Length: 294
Image 1 (cartoon, one colour):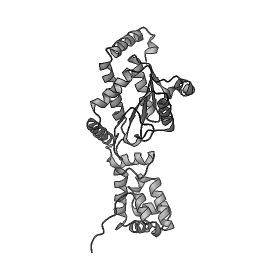
Image 2 (spheres, helix red, strand yellow):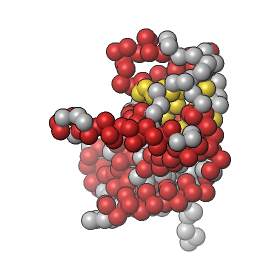
Image 3 (cartoon, one colour):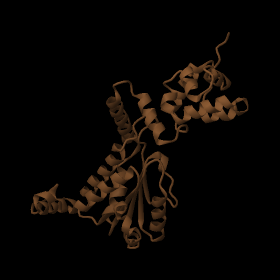
Image 4 (cartoon, helix red, strand yellow):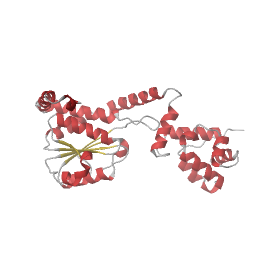
């Protein structure tokens, strides 16, 4: 007997193709699988059926209706989708589950390190020095720099603003001005630059600031991962870099490395402004009470 070739594609595609065959028990099983993806790839068919409250053989029947020889093949398909795919399980819990699936028992730290190294090596081949220079030249020639990132990008926004301030630039982290957001944005002019950060997708606030900045003629820079590359209108300069594949750690080191490169390059082209400001800041900080230096 010829072995059946297992289906390919995403789980959502399999469900759509076989919707007419699915029963009420199948629907309950699929709900359980999708709601807890890491257990879906670790449990056997009997365990999954028990959690769904259906007959122990129901998971096997579901697998066969979807085109698999049995539940082990279906579970292998789910694991591949979770680890390698980017359309199924599109939620934070599932992304965490994918990373745990990829990490072997007791090897979580090594798995994260490997993911970071892979993402950084890819960065070397996707972002050029010319991209960095376009960012740094734009910042150098700006009267004021507005920086905005929300979610995980907010921490990087705060760090960028701090470093630019210490380098002698009038930089504002918009995320820290929420109580005076409108007042702060209202000072924006065509002499200014907005540096936007977005991971996975630009939130509405970032899109709104992009629109306002464009209307006022301010220069716009965007640093994003590949999932958040859509801006309307497009920014003046845009660096987009993968932070890791599905099932890998979604690196914050990658965008931080790009930001560090931009600020370092800026110090090399601003006629000593950054260096002088850093020296002045260090000297001033030493005059402050000890508790202020923390």
